Image (spheres, rainbow, N blue to C red):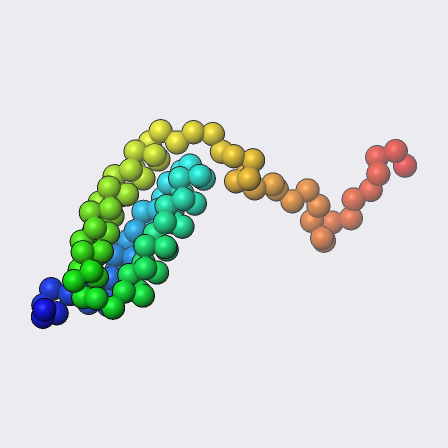
Length: 105
């Protein structure tokens, strides 16, 4: 079969970056990490694919998933829940240039 319609490397990279951006937009930590991992796995499989027909079908499927992922991330941002303890950034209590003294002196 001819390679007409095979997605270019640049098109695949653009789709990859768009899907990563959408994946990282989830407010929920578990969803965000899952979709980032899934996106990377999908595109690793595409990178290792040598059959042009299979690559075309994988690309077409990824385009569909990208649209769903973008809509889902928007909905997740609207209805995002509590932050997990894993996500909470603690403020540094001690600055290196500040000398703290005990209050009982």
